[in-house]
Length: 146
Image 1 (cartoon, rainbow, N blue to C red):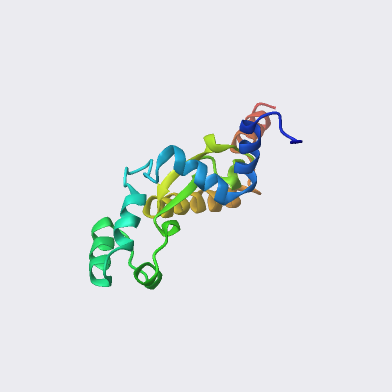
Image 2: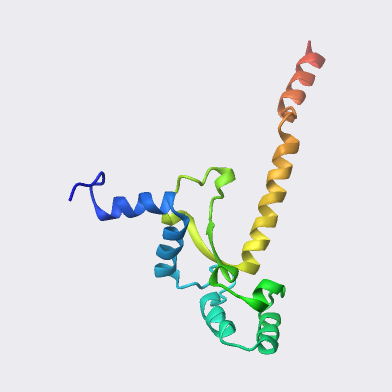
């Protein structure tokens, strides 16, 4: 069989970069759906919740710290419980990374990380057109001494 790749490892690395579902499967093989931030076994929680009646499901989701939504109550899927998160976010240069730049985060921790990222991006945008304070101080010192 002809392949554009030198090995199965190189092929998998490319597939992780280009296919989110493949990346998620590979990450699951390594981390089993356990959040690397808080330690929640989100995969097991999903399996348990999926088998419960709506009242039981509601209580279990609240106990786990999840915001209860209509979709979580009516048709939960595993993607609602854990995410394949970029350690170095795509918006900060982590888009071309392999599996080593991915980690499992439960939906709760992923929402917190996303909120922090949005804050960093907002502040970076504010600073986009600002001058470097060191240059202002240097110019000021030069003009005083001259």
